[in-house]
Image 1 (cartoon, each protein chain N blue to C red):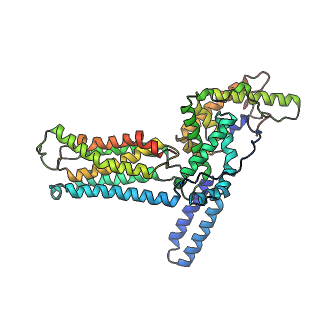
Image 2 (image 1 turned 180 degrees about the vertical axis):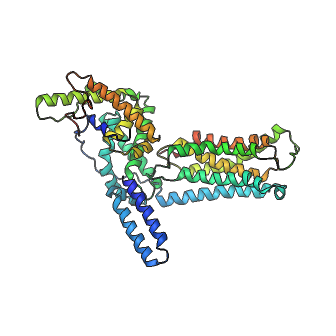
Image 3 (image 1 turned 135 degrees about the horizontal axis):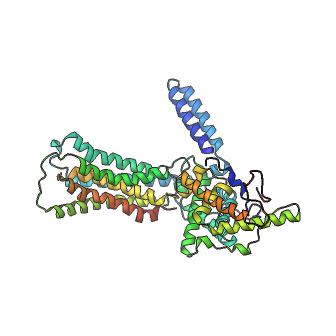
Length: 239
Length: 229
């Protein structure tokens, strides 16, 4: 959505520039307004990354504090243990540092950082010859945090969280990352497809297959209604 | 499947995971990673040096003697079109796109395939402007010689562009690097078409067209290792 707004603003700005060519004052005011609007669309972390890419070393702290938790959680969701997620997040920041000169002007940092984090994850999986489908975490031993008001609710939440985690780790990495980006990381389809490097249609299909697997796994839980069966049920740990 | 809100039915097992204590924003190593201005300068220098390399070789080896007699359509198809398409390929490969992750995967892949293919189709499809003369070499030797020259013309620009695009592609590194290779191949192919007077379509295909494909493959297999972030 932000990207759409950005491109809309830019198109608007260029259109305004073209029509107001006769009046220099009007054009400059319009341009100034458009620039301000684009600046407003970029978040603080985006602006910090731009400053860092331009050579302001101190801006790195701001980028790190804003992105590190998100990237760690993203890597955890891809199947990394806590320690490996921490290591790969650091590796991601190192790569971002080396590639800062390639960070495109006026763009958001999150998709770029996620793409680099994904590359780090793939490099790690290849180098350690870890099978991604049985990634470096054992689903049976994971202590999953759950919230619930009653004992029964908490039990169902824990059980469903375990089923989801186990199913996610058992499915193909391609499906997992598509689902994680869309469902848990809140990416738009366009952004997620760009991060993975596939078409939007292919990404939707992968996410849908992952969803079907997860739905079937949750439906198989004893005494647990399948999500989406009546369109109204919501699971206990839904965010 | 446009509305993906149904995905929210699946719970998030890590939704309430507490964050480990933050180490704060550690300063990156002071190894002088290039800033955006330095990167921009390097890229411009890489492109300028590559063009200078091709132009210098053209000046040394000379433009083909039958150039003045060639029909305009033939010159446009064999020289202008490859050069324009090569420049477009380079522009598409390094374009940041909406998200700063490059243009769409379909467009990049299609252009990486169409680059060498268009060169081959034009080589075979254009009417021959005059009777091909064999020259001092046999078909295969002549083709091998031209292939050699075209590849050597493409080699330096490939290296320069690879160095200037180091760590530039966080996504689609293989297809974007293949497109960069195809772009360099097309520019070299256009340059050799401007130098070599052989109008035999099969010579154009083997001697001038194969290096375009080789450059694209080199881009995908070798340059991608440098350009991946």
